[in-house]
Amino acid sequence: MIRWKLILPIIAIGVAALGGVALLVTAPEVDQIERPAFVRAVRVVEVEAQALPLIVHSQGTVAPRTESELVPEVSGRIVWSSPALVSGGFFREGESLLRLDRDDYETALARARASLERAKGEWEHAKATLERREELARQGVASSSQLDDARRQGRVSAAALDEAELALRQARRDLDRTEIRAPFDGRVRIEHVDVGQFLSRGQSVATLYATDYVEIRLPIPDSELAYLDLPLFAGATLAEGPTVTLRAHFAGSSHTWRGRIVRTEGEIDPKSRMVHAVARVEDPYATSEGGAPLAGVSDGGAPLAVGLFVEAEIEGPIAENVLRVPRGALRDRNYLLVVGADDRLQKLEVELLRLERDDALVRATLPPGGRVCVSQVAMFVPGMKVDPQPVTPPQDEHGPGEETHR
Image 1 (cartoon, rainbow, N blue to C red):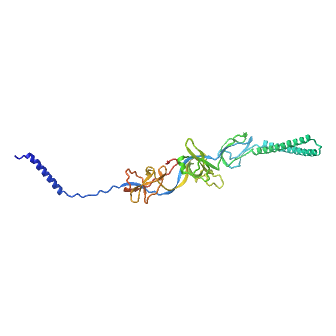
Image 2 (cartoon, rainbow, N blue to C red; image 1 turned 135 degrees about the vertical axis):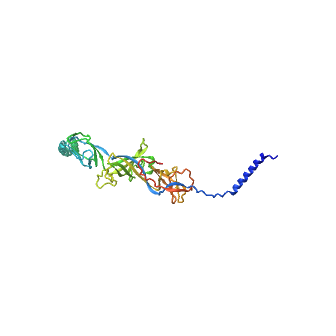
Image 3 (cartoon, helix red, strand yellow; image 1 turned 90 degrees about the vertical axis):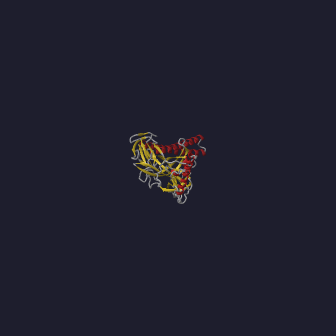
């Protein structure tokens, strides 16, 4: 007896296999379509090598080169005061600022003259007496004691004459000192006296400061000193120091002044660990005749007033073959990704000069047609094909204190 329970499954499997083969044989051919390779789009900026000055930023307060107290060398009552002797008044060197009552000093001068005439008479008499005694002594008529007395009288009268001449000179000086003159070209910070007031010798009349030039102490970090050609502590005075551009907001608008670094101070600040360079601006109030080479009045006519807080840009040496690139384009502080003329991504080693707020200054040589990639590339393969998309870097105005350094 045939076992259909075993034969039927075998027959079903065979029929299914034959059907599958028939389907494969009669199936239509599938067209092979080549999938295009993926090309990533990246943002690029075009930069050019240029020569740039390395700028060091700092800030400080304008101070006069010298400030002093005006004091009388004699006592007396004030009889006249100059219109310039007021707070904020300008004056010239040698200009009369104050006059004291001269009567007592003119009397003292007359007495000194009279004393001098009397001393001259005594000295002439003593000299004649000495000459007679010496002649008599040679003839053997005068005694030695008489000759000694004549010599002593001659020395005493000569000393009295010298004393009278000195007293006359002192009286003339005291009379001249009743007129107080300006010791330099300057300005009055504050005055303390007025006409009719009695002044004692050494009493302060006014506080003055010079206006021929002003100085600004500029703190510089030690990391910045490499960008400046400054003498440090040895020979600290500069004959021709770096140029300084000073900026401040004054009288409702921004102003710019030009100056020069003239020296560095002789020590490092123990608190800030900075070296102080001193900038000088000549003629800050435009009071000198003919003007100064680096005058302290801005193009807008604003003076560089004492006490003004300014921001400074010190020009360092010129660096050649420098690229200014967006700060985000710098990778690991030592290389850039650049897109060549064939639109392939390559790695370019660079020398980092400094970092500014949004830019980096590097020294490198771009390949022909090279553009700097500013996109973040997670997986970089040298020579990979990319689709460069040009972008314009934002214009950045670099402000003081908004930079970091390597």
